[in-house]
Image (tube, rainbow, N blue to C red; front, side, top):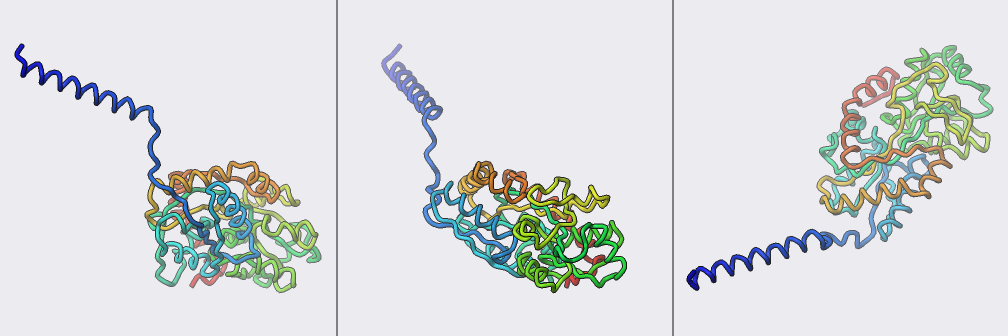
Length: 339
């Protein structure tokens, strides 16, 4: 063998050996982080005012998310337009992970169908889905001194005065409005639904003041009034009993209402959040939901966990958008002005 050929083979062997060393190193050394996110406070938007049932969810999530990520998380309340005001503002922000939001599925699926304005969103293609969070049960509540001790009592009174009794709901397109509309359809009675765009907190104040006859809203949001004896629940959506206060599912009372009546909350952000940042937020969100502190808070307030990945939650919201047309028909049949 001549010297030139031997030299070429030697160089080739050395290159292969060096490549093997590099590849071996790649399989054992940890990957370098692709982002130092987060390095500043995060803004968490909510489409409802303080005092309603959604606000405590946002604040508990913000508190625990801040612990997970090591930065502050500030709740920004932006009520109006059945949540559209908040969603529109969020989707107009930079997709850098420092602006996120939570919302019930109805805000993201039904509201775009009903808005008379041209909204910046119509479905999951218009935002980044972070994940599912929890489910709330919506119940029909009346004042304890109303004279109605059972759901049958209320239905009988409503049938005696068709369209005269008033029931507050948090918005024209919310799950509690659809739940009440469905109950009217199934049980064969009619009341006048009164939307409160500021949320269930405003409806609760009106019920306490005697300005409306009842309200259909999240039982957890009005737990204080239920425990104090100011309100009683005549029944609620879903299939599970509500343990913090005496309440029975409508289905158990003979009135199986639409599944759209349950309020499922999701976390989302502007369209185009980078994958590495999304992975960090989504993972932190799942850790919050799985934490003992959040579980205890949910148990105390009567929530059910609904943890789902960005992919799972995205599929759920796409289905919700398809089902929204059923909800719109229920609202129209209930006599709500949908604009």
